[in-house]
Amino acid sequence: MISMQKVSKVYPNGVVAVDDLELEIQDGEFLYVVGPSGAGKSTFMKMIYREEKPSSGLLLIDGIDVGKLKNRHVPKLRRQLGVIFQDYKLLPSLTVYENVAFALEVVQADTNTMRKQVMDVLNLVGLKHKARNYPDELSGGEQQRVSIARAIVNKPKLIIADEPTGNLDPDTAWGIMEVFEEIHRRGATIVMATHNRDIVDKIRHRVIAIENGKVVRDEEKGAYGYDI
Amino acid sequence: MIFKSGFRHLREGFKGTLRNGWMTFAAISAVTITLLLVGVFALVMFNVNEISENVENDVEIQVFVTRTAEEANVEKLGENLEQIPGVESVTFSSKEDELENFRNQLGEDANAYGTVEKDNPLHDRYIVKASDPLETETVADAVQSLANVDKVTYGQDYIDKMFAFFNGIRIGGLVLIVGLTLMAMFLISNTIKMTIFSRRREIEIMRLVGAKNSFIRWPFFIEGLLLGVFGALIPIAVIYFGYDVAYSALQPSLDQLNSDIFKLIDPSILTTQVSLVLLALGAFIGIWGSTTSLGRFLKV
Image (tube, rainbow over all chains, first blue to last red; front, top):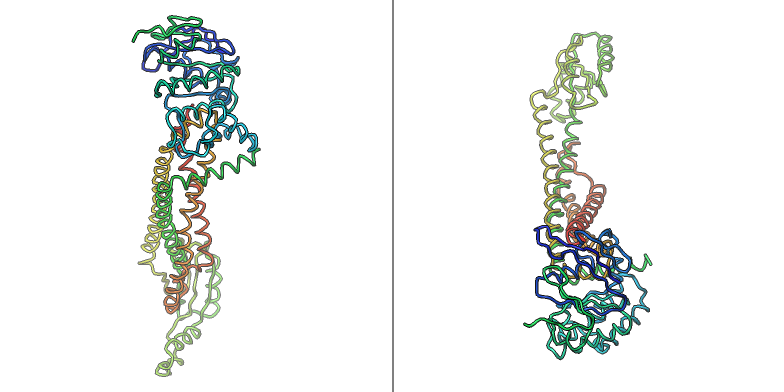
């Protein structure tokens, strides 16, 4: 699904965020990305959804050379993956339903398919009954479920989640992880950056640790491994 | 599909104006005020221009024929006048005609001049018009050199100053209108920039879920168009009805001057044109303002 060969990212101010990275992520894998703040995790994630371009090296997403991808083709890439953030990024003026439907409007799905798809994913994340509510009326966990619903409504093969449980209490975080597990079971590849030791240690998947822009550890069914 | 997304963009454009109520109000007010100024100035300018053209076209060269000239020579002079380059028309008024006019102007008092007819003191007169009013002086010089010409007058002293004055007004008015339009564009694009800035999150999310730039742009394009068109409505109404009122109030008193010069332009001709220009200007400014301010949020 993702192939990185000697990928580096140097920002214009000279900071080397990602340094000569080599990595293969197979279809259907669940990958935790751990490491201290400022180690290059976010840049790593941003390159995958092409918010940042690699400065050098080859980055392939599902066969697409992201480094050479022209700006006008970026929307096409984005439609094939779902992105989830710590701060949910919901639009407060839209209802839950509308927030999720937003991702389908963009690809100009017809109204009937859209309604069915939106209700299906809301059902999956357990928020069918809140479809008419506004984000302000929901708890943090529920808002994150909405943002997950929006990310998966296009049925993407790849999900990028940047600290999805960062703002949530432990119980709520477990609830979110159940949703991710379900999506994973259905066949999606998931790349999740996280600081949540508890989750990484208990729900075992492949773990890569990034420090100073390099992969310093890569373990199947690994543990969080940092003592904080 | 295109039709369907077109409908979606229209709906989103309308929604956008409602959702950002105060910003919309601010932007529309900015369009309204500046277009109102532009419109009023345009009306004034068109009328000043019309009057100055009337004045310019009214400039005539009076050619007084020597009183001792034979009839044949007077006719010859008329032919010569017509051959001067740049002459548009030559009209002859004999001294008898002149006396008749004079008497008509005096009305009843004319009887006091009863004896004058026997010994008419007036000149035969040619009235020469230059095809380009600005060439009047050249033509007048050429006339002066012809035989049997007693005196040539065309208001030498004030005509140059008058032309310069009208030109000044025209250029000044044009500069003013262009300046106002630029100011309007600046004001409006700034207001729209604020509305877009307050919606940068929405744009960010649209981009994240894979919206093409054109898809993001369309609703803003329509919103800008709406802002511009709504902003133009009040100025158009004011100009449409206001000019009509001003025309009916002013023109009767101008009519009393009994002159071909001081005529305002008929509202039926002027207001429709100015309104259409304002509408187009509003739409253009709105669209321009919203699409240019969007640019920096669309960098991928």
